Length: 128
Image (tube, rainbow, N blue to C red):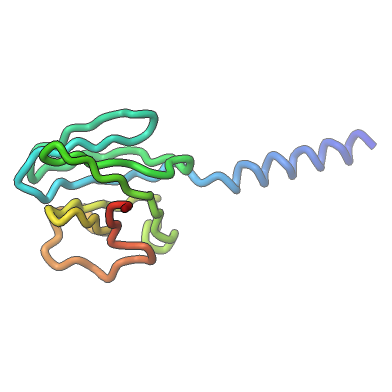
């Protein structure tokens, strides 16, 4: 009986671990002529100079983030591209444009002049 309970416990833990994807590494590129502030997990803030980038971990619990530019805050609902877009390393880029749209990119070099076909839910647009 105890070996059966142990086996069930091991299976439950394995399912729990495989059901939670790792934090996704997201390279955020400010493709505007102004500094921006990215506000994300628990109010953390990152200031990005014009035409600069930084990499942030976006954990699976992250549901939204904000971008502040010229004193105006825009709120976005996070959409994770599919695994095939992030394959093989749970990594992708977000290119923030002056229009307020945010594009998903697979390239490690940004800015991307010719934006790729966007995954479902992209480009991100501010919530109304």
